[in-house]
Each structure stands twice: as C-alpha cells, then as structure tokens.
Image 1 (spheres, rainbow, N blue to C red):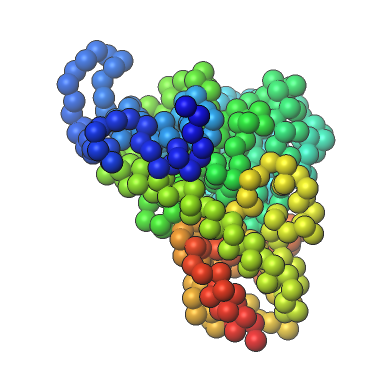
Image 2: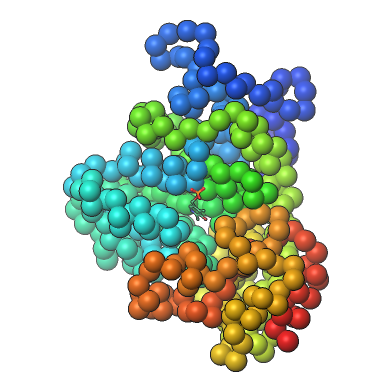
Length: 373
Ligand SMILES: *Cc1c(COP(=O)(O)O)cnc(C)c1O
C-alpha cells in the first residue's frame, strides 16, 4: 500500500508488537559470521536501521546510513566518493562547516574543487573539468535562501557521468525530495529539522544501493556511528516531522509577509515569496518553502539593539527546532569568511537569519513588531 509522507513518519518500519521499537544498546552480540555481526560501528543495529528505513521511504531512496553528526555524513560521503586528483563542483552558499571541510582538508587529500555561483546547469557547465567526479549542492542555501534548479543540475550530472550529492537539511524530505529529480545522494544534518527539538546531533545519507555500499565500506573505517539511545529519540522525532514542518512552513510564510510589508526591513529572503528571484523554480521542486528566512534591516535600525529587544525569539545558534531563534551570520556562521567575500555574497552586518519555530505566528509577529518599533 502506498503511504503518504505523514503516515510514513508516524508508523514504524518494523513490527515489534508495540507502538515503539525496543532499544538494543548491546555492543557485544552473538557471533554470526565475519560479515554479518551486529555492532554499532557497522551501522547495523536495529535502532540505526529503523531510522534509515524510514528516511529511505521519505526520500524515495533504496539504502542509507545514519551518522553521529551531519558533518560525519558529509565528510564520510565526500571522502568515500573522491580520490586524489579528482575534482568536485560545489555550489556557493553551502553550510559553513562543509565549506571549512572543503577548503581546509581537501588539499591534504589531493582533491581539487571549484565553487560555482549560479542556480542552473550553465554555471556548473562553465567549471566542468575532465577530472570532475562529483557535483555538490544545497538548496535552499544558507543564509540567503537561494535556490538551485534540481532537475537541471541532476541532468547535467547524469550527462557528464558525475555523482550528484545534495544537502537537503533546510528543506527536509517533507518539502523536497531531490532523488525524484534525479539526484544520486541526499545528505542531512539531522541535528536540525529531523531531530527538531534542539537536543539531538546526527546525520543521514541516503542513495541507491550501489552508492550506499561504496560509502558504507569507508564508513566502517571513518567510524562516525550513532548510539542506540539517540536513535530511539530520533525515531520518536521523525513521527512528528510532517506536522512540525507543515507548521514551520505556515508560520514562516506569515512572518515573511509581515517583514516584507514593514518599512524598517530592507529586504526579505524567502523562496515562498513571489518576489524571490527564483520563486518560480522553488515552486516546481518544493511542496513547502521551509522554516528558514533571512532579512536585512534598514540603516536606521541597529541589529544589536533589535536583537536585545526581542522577547520570544532568542538569539541562538543552530536551527530547525520547534522554538524560533535568530542569528547574525556576519558574527556567527560566517565570521571566518573574509569581509570582502562575505559582503560580495550579500552577508552584511544588518543581515539576520531567522529559524521560525512552531509557536503561534501572531505571537512571533508581535515580538518582531515591538522590537522594530
Ligand atoms: C548544521 C548543518 C550541517 C552540519 O550538521 P552537524 O549535525 O552540525 O554536523 C550541515 N549542513 C547544513 C545545511 C546544516 O545546517
């Protein structure tokens, strides 16, 4: 029976004759045979596997791996797919930690890379090299919520026999399923929406069976596995993923519309707004526009004073939790980026990134309104 995503979220993938999967914390398990033993670092305990099964159903993938952080998923995947001398195309505006991995670690491994500015395949085509093996992207991007055309980039990758990899953290599979558009590998920082309560750190990789096997082989040595107790909490979080994301979508649209109409706001970045540069593309590939938005204040409003005046929305790092939080990328996520590069990308001191929670939207708008006055 074909199940909708809300139903997939709620129902367990395996039947243990109860509403919840039992926790199997054992690290010492019966010897079965060299390749078949259960061990947490082999990513094959029941609690790890039920999460992967559910994520595969949600993303439309055949196989996957759950990791101990988003960065463990990302680094293991990229370092498994790339060899010395290989080249990777990366879209600009990716997560800061991934940017750091690429610019600070890849050279040591002899992996070459180019950053690509632009939302469609021609931008990627322009930087294609004979040794390009992987194209890596993220949409909507961080912090400016720019959009990459999934279908075009996946087709570009197929035509050139590249493996296409995407970080789908911001959208979640509830809003966007890149595999449906032809992407090969989907990654998540589960720490954000999948966990959703700001109390879990994990990552997920899903793909075809063949690519999963290729990555799995190296995962065993890189060792970024996750424990059974956290897996249990993740399975619990996933049950409410669809309802949480629906509310994030709804609230964020309302907040974006309020900010757009406020004279103290210079610009609002949200792919759900009709005046977003790439709204038309976003509409073709997203079921909802997500819980992240960014905005710039006009020059007469001081960002720090504005943040101090907020009563509900808390200045805080990370994102994707049920509570609304705000951050100033120029002094947090992008503080290490050279100022000229940061400004070139549009990350000014007055830019604020808001992770809209699932509170009452009117309360959030009231809070923003009083802090702007
Ligand atoms: C947070 C984040 C990551 C890194 O995830 P961790 O769980 O912190 O390792 C990767 N990509 C995106 C888009 C993120 O927001």
